[in-house]
Image 1: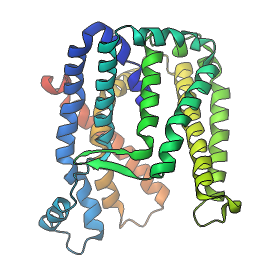
Image 2 (image 1 turned 180 degrees about the horizontal axis):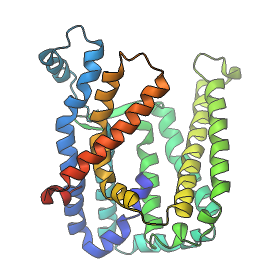
Image 3 (image 1 turned 45 degrees about the horizontal axis):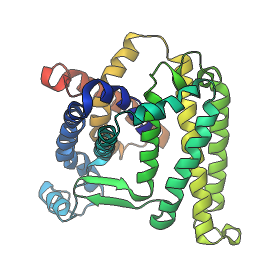
Image 4 (image 1 turned 30 degrees about the vertical axis):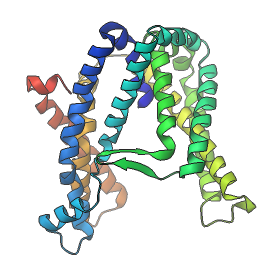
Amino acid sequence: MFFLSGMFVGPSLARKGGGSFLRDRALRLGAPFVVMALLAPLAYYPAYRATAADPGVLAFWREWLSLGVWPSGPVWFVAVLLGFDIIAAAVHRLDPVLIERVGRLTSICNRRPTALFVALMLVSAAAYLPMRAVFGPESWATVGPFSVQSSRALHYLVYFLAGVAVGDCGIGDGLLAPDGRLGRRWFRWTRNAWALCAVYVVVLVALAPDRPAFGLPPLARQLILGLCFVLCCGAISFAMLAVFRRFANTRTPVLTSLSRNAYGIYLTHYGFVMWLQYALLPAAIPAAAKAAIVLSCTLAASWATTAALRRIPAVAKVI
Protein backbone atom coordinates (compact mmCIF):
# COMPACT_ATOMS: atom_id res chain seq x y z
CA MET A 1 0.00 0.00 0.00
CA PHE A 2 2.87 2.39 0.68
CA PHE A 3 4.36 1.45 -2.69
CA LEU A 4 1.07 2.12 -4.50
CA SER A 5 0.57 5.39 -2.65
CA GLY A 6 4.06 6.54 -3.58
CA MET A 7 3.47 5.95 -7.28
CA PHE A 8 1.22 9.02 -7.52
CA VAL A 9 3.47 11.41 -5.60
CA GLY A 10 5.98 12.43 -8.29
CA PRO A 11 3.46 13.55 -10.94
CA SER A 12 1.37 15.28 -8.27
CA LEU A 13 4.38 17.21 -6.93
CA ALA A 14 5.42 18.24 -10.44
CA ARG A 15 1.90 19.42 -11.25
CA LYS A 16 0.99 21.19 -7.99
CA GLY A 17 4.26 22.16 -6.40
CA GLY A 18 5.23 21.35 -2.83
CA GLY A 19 2.89 23.78 -1.05
CA SER A 20 -0.28 22.85 -2.91
CA PHE A 21 0.65 19.19 -2.71
CA LEU A 22 0.93 19.30 1.07
CA ARG A 23 -2.31 21.26 1.46
CA ASP A 24 -4.07 18.64 -0.62
CA ARG A 25 -2.50 15.81 1.39
CA ALA A 26 -3.45 17.48 4.66
CA LEU A 27 -7.06 17.58 3.50
CA ARG A 28 -7.15 14.11 1.99
CA LEU A 29 -5.17 12.34 4.72
CA GLY A 30 -5.04 14.57 7.79
CA ALA A 31 -8.74 15.40 8.04
CA PRO A 32 -9.96 11.76 7.70
CA PHE A 33 -7.32 10.65 10.21
CA VAL A 34 -8.57 13.12 12.82
CA VAL A 35 -12.22 12.15 12.29
CA MET A 36 -11.64 8.40 12.34
CA ALA A 37 -9.26 8.62 15.31
CA LEU A 38 -11.93 10.46 17.28
CA LEU A 39 -14.44 7.75 16.36
CA ALA A 40 -12.04 4.91 17.20
CA PRO A 41 -13.54 4.21 20.67
CA LEU A 42 -16.81 3.21 18.98
CA ALA A 43 -14.93 0.53 17.06
CA TYR A 44 -12.99 -0.75 20.07
CA TYR A 45 -15.95 -0.89 22.42
CA PRO A 46 -17.23 -4.35 21.37
CA ALA A 47 -13.81 -5.89 22.08
CA TYR A 48 -14.00 -4.40 25.57
CA ARG A 49 -17.53 -5.68 26.12
CA ALA A 50 -16.49 -9.22 25.21
CA THR A 51 -14.08 -9.54 28.15
CA ALA A 52 -14.78 -6.79 30.70
CA ALA A 53 -16.30 -7.46 34.11
CA ASP A 54 -18.20 -4.19 33.79
CA PRO A 55 -19.20 -3.76 30.12
CA GLY A 56 -20.83 -0.36 30.68
CA VAL A 57 -19.98 2.67 28.59
CA LEU A 58 -18.65 4.70 31.52
CA ALA A 59 -16.37 1.88 32.65
CA PHE A 60 -15.07 1.52 29.09
CA TRP A 61 -14.44 5.25 28.86
CA ARG A 62 -12.49 5.29 32.12
CA GLU A 63 -10.44 2.33 30.90
CA TRP A 64 -9.85 4.05 27.56
CA LEU A 65 -8.61 7.27 29.15
CA SER A 66 -6.31 5.32 31.46
CA LEU A 67 -4.38 3.86 28.50
CA GLY A 68 -2.21 6.95 28.14
CA VAL A 69 -2.51 6.72 24.35
CA TRP A 70 -5.41 6.94 21.90
CA PRO A 71 -5.54 3.80 19.71
CA SER A 72 -6.63 4.81 16.21
CA GLY A 73 -6.98 1.41 14.56
CA PRO A 74 -6.04 0.93 10.89
CA VAL A 75 -5.89 4.66 10.18
CA TRP A 76 -2.36 4.65 11.64
CA PHE A 77 -1.43 3.98 8.00
CA VAL A 78 -2.96 7.29 6.90
CA ALA A 79 -0.93 9.30 9.42
CA VAL A 80 2.32 7.53 8.47
CA LEU A 81 1.57 8.09 4.79
CA LEU A 82 1.08 11.81 5.46
CA GLY A 83 4.48 11.86 7.16
CA PHE A 84 6.05 10.21 4.11
CA ASP A 85 4.36 12.74 1.83
CA ILE A 86 5.94 15.53 3.90
CA ILE A 87 9.35 13.88 3.40
CA ALA A 88 8.76 13.65 -0.37
CA ALA A 89 7.71 17.31 -0.52
CA ALA A 90 10.83 18.32 1.42
CA VAL A 91 13.05 16.35 -0.97
CA HIS A 92 11.31 17.99 -3.93
CA ARG A 93 11.89 21.44 -2.44
CA LEU A 94 15.59 20.79 -1.80
CA ASP A 95 16.17 19.26 -5.24
CA PRO A 96 13.21 19.61 -7.64
CA VAL A 97 14.72 17.24 -10.23
CA LEU A 98 15.98 14.50 -7.90
CA ILE A 99 12.78 12.47 -8.10
CA GLU A 100 12.81 12.79 -11.88
CA ARG A 101 16.41 11.61 -12.09
CA VAL A 102 15.73 8.59 -9.89
CA GLY A 103 12.56 7.90 -11.86
CA ARG A 104 14.57 7.68 -15.06
CA LEU A 105 16.66 4.92 -13.48
CA THR A 106 13.50 2.83 -13.04
CA SER A 107 12.23 3.42 -16.59
CA ILE A 108 13.76 0.12 -17.71
CA CYS A 109 11.54 -1.80 -15.29
CA ASN A 110 9.10 -2.70 -18.04
CA ARG A 111 11.87 -4.84 -19.53
CA ARG A 112 13.67 -5.82 -16.32
CA PRO A 113 11.24 -6.02 -13.37
CA THR A 114 13.48 -8.62 -11.72
CA ALA A 115 16.27 -6.04 -11.44
CA LEU A 116 13.95 -3.69 -9.55
CA PHE A 117 12.78 -6.56 -7.34
CA VAL A 118 16.35 -7.51 -6.41
CA ALA A 119 17.29 -3.88 -5.70
CA LEU A 120 14.18 -3.39 -3.57
CA MET A 121 14.89 -6.56 -1.60
CA LEU A 122 18.47 -5.50 -0.88
CA VAL A 123 17.50 -2.01 0.27
CA SER A 124 14.48 -3.14 2.28
CA ALA A 125 16.52 -5.87 3.98
CA ALA A 126 19.17 -3.30 4.90
CA ALA A 127 16.44 -1.07 6.34
CA TYR A 128 14.39 -3.74 8.11
CA LEU A 129 16.78 -6.33 9.54
CA PRO A 130 18.71 -4.00 11.89
CA MET A 131 15.45 -2.46 13.13
CA ARG A 132 14.01 -5.92 13.80
CA ALA A 133 17.15 -6.93 15.68
CA VAL A 134 16.83 -3.83 17.89
CA PHE A 135 13.07 -3.58 18.42
CA GLY A 136 11.81 -7.10 17.69
CA PRO A 137 9.07 -7.95 15.19
CA GLU A 138 6.00 -6.90 17.18
CA SER A 139 6.73 -3.65 19.05
CA TRP A 140 4.86 -0.45 18.24
CA ALA A 141 5.90 3.15 18.78
CA THR A 142 2.84 5.13 19.89
CA VAL A 143 2.30 8.78 20.74
CA GLY A 144 -1.32 9.72 21.32
CA PRO A 145 -3.24 8.54 18.21
CA PHE A 146 -0.06 8.16 16.12
CA SER A 147 1.54 4.75 15.91
CA VAL A 148 3.77 2.65 13.70
CA GLN A 149 5.49 -0.70 14.05
CA SER A 150 8.97 0.18 15.26
CA SER A 151 10.86 -2.38 13.20
CA ARG A 152 8.94 -1.62 9.99
CA ALA A 153 9.08 2.19 9.87
CA LEU A 154 12.09 2.32 7.52
CA HIS A 155 10.81 -0.72 5.63
CA TYR A 156 7.59 1.15 4.85
CA LEU A 157 9.55 4.25 3.86
CA VAL A 158 11.65 2.23 1.42
CA TYR A 159 8.53 0.90 -0.30
CA PHE A 160 7.01 4.37 -0.44
CA LEU A 161 10.12 5.91 -2.00
CA ALA A 162 10.38 3.01 -4.45
CA GLY A 163 6.80 3.74 -5.48
CA VAL A 164 7.67 7.43 -5.92
CA ALA A 165 10.56 6.51 -8.21
CA VAL A 166 8.56 4.01 -10.26
CA GLY A 167 5.53 6.28 -10.56
CA ASP A 168 7.49 9.28 -11.76
CA CYS A 169 7.82 7.83 -15.26
CA GLY A 170 4.05 7.34 -15.49
CA ILE A 171 1.63 4.64 -14.35
CA GLY A 172 1.31 3.32 -17.90
CA ASP A 173 5.05 3.14 -18.44
CA GLY A 174 7.94 1.50 -16.67
CA LEU A 175 7.04 -1.32 -14.31
CA LEU A 176 3.31 -1.23 -15.06
CA ALA A 177 3.52 -0.75 -18.82
CA PRO A 178 0.71 -2.70 -20.54
CA ASP A 179 3.22 -4.62 -22.64
CA GLY A 180 5.81 -4.92 -19.87
CA ARG A 181 7.28 -8.17 -18.65
CA LEU A 182 5.72 -7.91 -15.20
CA GLY A 183 2.17 -8.32 -16.51
CA ARG A 184 3.11 -10.78 -19.21
CA ARG A 185 4.85 -13.03 -16.68
CA TRP A 186 2.15 -12.79 -14.01
CA PHE A 187 1.99 -16.55 -13.52
CA ARG A 188 5.70 -16.83 -12.80
CA TRP A 189 5.54 -14.03 -10.24
CA THR A 190 2.44 -15.54 -8.62
CA ARG A 191 3.96 -19.01 -8.48
CA ASN A 192 7.16 -17.70 -6.92
CA ALA A 193 5.20 -15.66 -4.37
CA TRP A 194 3.24 -18.73 -3.27
CA ALA A 195 6.48 -20.72 -3.02
CA LEU A 196 8.16 -18.09 -0.86
CA CYS A 197 5.09 -17.86 1.37
CA ALA A 198 5.17 -21.64 1.85
CA VAL A 199 8.85 -21.47 2.78
CA TYR A 200 8.10 -18.63 5.21
CA VAL A 201 5.40 -20.69 6.94
CA VAL A 202 7.79 -23.62 7.31
CA VAL A 203 10.48 -21.36 8.75
CA LEU A 204 7.97 -19.73 11.12
CA VAL A 205 6.97 -23.14 12.47
CA ALA A 206 10.54 -24.40 12.68
CA LEU A 207 11.81 -21.27 14.46
CA ALA A 208 8.80 -20.71 16.71
CA PRO A 209 9.69 -19.49 20.23
CA ASP A 210 8.76 -22.86 21.75
CA ARG A 211 11.05 -24.79 19.39
CA PRO A 212 14.78 -25.47 19.97
CA ALA A 213 15.56 -23.65 16.67
CA PHE A 214 18.39 -26.09 15.88
CA GLY A 215 20.71 -24.35 18.31
CA LEU A 216 20.50 -21.00 16.55
CA PRO A 217 21.09 -17.96 18.77
CA PRO A 218 18.16 -15.53 19.10
CA LEU A 219 19.74 -12.92 16.80
CA ALA A 220 20.31 -15.43 13.99
CA ARG A 221 16.73 -16.66 14.35
CA GLN A 222 15.41 -13.08 14.12
CA LEU A 223 17.53 -12.33 11.05
CA ILE A 224 16.38 -15.49 9.24
CA LEU A 225 12.73 -14.75 10.00
CA GLY A 226 13.24 -11.12 9.01
CA LEU A 227 14.82 -12.03 5.68
CA CYS A 228 11.93 -14.38 4.91
CA PHE A 229 9.50 -11.58 5.77
CA VAL A 230 11.29 -9.15 3.44
CA LEU A 231 11.27 -11.61 0.55
CA CYS A 232 7.59 -12.47 1.05
CA CYS A 233 6.60 -8.79 1.14
CA GLY A 234 8.37 -8.12 -2.13
CA ALA A 235 7.17 -11.27 -3.86
CA ILE A 236 3.53 -10.75 -2.87
CA SER A 237 3.64 -7.08 -3.88
CA PHE A 238 5.06 -7.80 -7.32
CA ALA A 239 2.73 -10.76 -7.85
CA MET A 240 -0.34 -8.66 -7.01
CA LEU A 241 0.83 -5.89 -9.35
CA ALA A 242 1.44 -8.45 -12.10
CA VAL A 243 -1.99 -10.06 -11.73
CA PHE A 244 -3.85 -6.75 -11.76
CA ARG A 245 -1.75 -5.42 -14.64
CA ARG A 246 -2.58 -8.54 -16.63
CA PHE A 247 -6.28 -8.94 -15.86
CA ALA A 248 -7.73 -5.68 -14.47
CA ASN A 249 -7.54 -3.72 -17.70
CA THR A 250 -11.23 -3.35 -18.53
CA ARG A 251 -13.54 -0.81 -16.94
CA THR A 252 -16.72 -2.22 -15.43
CA PRO A 253 -19.37 -0.44 -13.34
CA VAL A 254 -18.49 -2.53 -10.28
CA LEU A 255 -14.72 -1.94 -10.52
CA THR A 256 -15.26 1.75 -11.22
CA SER A 257 -17.43 2.08 -8.12
CA LEU A 258 -14.93 0.12 -6.06
CA SER A 259 -12.12 2.38 -7.26
CA ARG A 260 -14.02 5.53 -6.36
CA ASN A 261 -15.00 4.26 -2.92
CA ALA A 262 -11.87 2.29 -1.98
CA TYR A 263 -10.38 4.97 0.25
CA GLY A 264 -13.62 5.43 2.17
CA ILE A 265 -13.99 1.65 2.51
CA TYR A 266 -10.56 1.53 4.13
CA LEU A 267 -11.44 4.36 6.50
CA THR A 268 -14.80 2.96 7.63
CA HIS A 269 -14.37 -0.82 7.56
CA TYR A 270 -12.86 -1.34 11.01
CA GLY A 271 -15.96 -0.50 13.03
CA PHE A 272 -18.09 -2.87 10.96
CA VAL A 273 -15.53 -5.65 11.41
CA MET A 274 -15.44 -5.29 15.18
CA TRP A 275 -19.20 -5.06 15.72
CA LEU A 276 -19.97 -7.93 13.32
CA GLN A 277 -17.42 -10.16 15.04
CA TYR A 278 -18.97 -9.30 18.38
CA ALA A 279 -22.48 -10.00 17.09
CA LEU A 280 -21.40 -13.43 15.81
CA LEU A 281 -19.63 -14.53 19.00
CA PRO A 282 -22.60 -16.54 20.34
CA ALA A 283 -23.41 -18.07 16.94
CA ALA A 284 -22.73 -21.82 16.83
CA ILE A 285 -21.26 -21.86 13.33
CA PRO A 286 -17.76 -22.69 12.04
CA ALA A 287 -15.09 -20.00 12.24
CA ALA A 288 -14.70 -20.04 8.46
CA ALA A 289 -18.38 -19.24 8.04
CA LYS A 290 -18.11 -16.37 10.53
CA ALA A 291 -15.11 -15.01 8.65
CA ALA A 292 -17.00 -15.16 5.35
CA ILE A 293 -20.01 -13.39 6.85
CA VAL A 294 -17.87 -10.66 8.42
CA LEU A 295 -15.88 -10.14 5.23
CA SER A 296 -18.87 -9.92 2.90
CA CYS A 297 -21.05 -7.84 5.24
CA THR A 298 -18.20 -5.47 6.09
CA LEU A 299 -17.40 -4.90 2.44
CA ALA A 300 -21.05 -4.27 1.59
CA ALA A 301 -21.66 -2.01 4.59
CA SER A 302 -18.49 0.08 4.26
CA TRP A 303 -18.96 0.34 0.49
CA ALA A 304 -22.56 1.53 0.88
CA THR A 305 -21.61 3.92 3.68
CA THR A 306 -18.83 5.46 1.62
CA ALA A 307 -21.04 5.81 -1.45
CA ALA A 308 -23.67 7.56 0.66
CA LEU A 309 -21.14 9.90 2.30
CA ARG A 310 -19.65 10.81 -1.06
CA ARG A 311 -23.01 12.22 -2.13
CA ILE A 312 -22.14 15.12 0.20
CA PRO A 313 -19.97 17.44 -1.99
CA ALA A 314 -17.64 18.46 0.84
CA VAL A 315 -17.00 14.82 1.77
CA ALA A 316 -16.55 13.78 -1.86
CA LYS A 317 -13.64 16.21 -2.15
CA VAL A 318 -11.86 14.39 0.65
CA ILE A 319 -12.67 10.71 0.13
